[in-house]
Length: 76
Image (cartoon, rainbow, N blue to C red; front, side, top):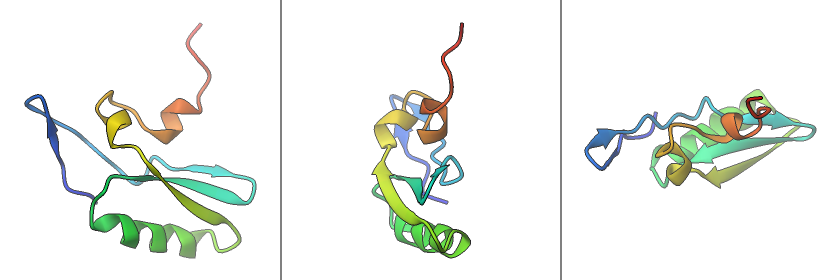
C-alpha cells in the first residue's frame, strides 16, 4: 500500500487495486510513492503476458476515484 497523503485536511485513499486490465496491458496507478515499484512487480507477476504501465494518478485520487472509475460508463 502507498502512504495515505492528505489533501486540504482530508485523508486520501490511494490504492493499487484500482488497476485496469486491457488486451495485452495493465494500467496501474502510481502515486510517486516508494511502494509503486513493488506494486508494479507484483502485478507484472500476476499478468506475465501483459505490459504493466504505471499512470500517475494522485491528482485523480483527490477526486475520490482512479483508473478503473474513469473507464466506467457515465451515469445516465
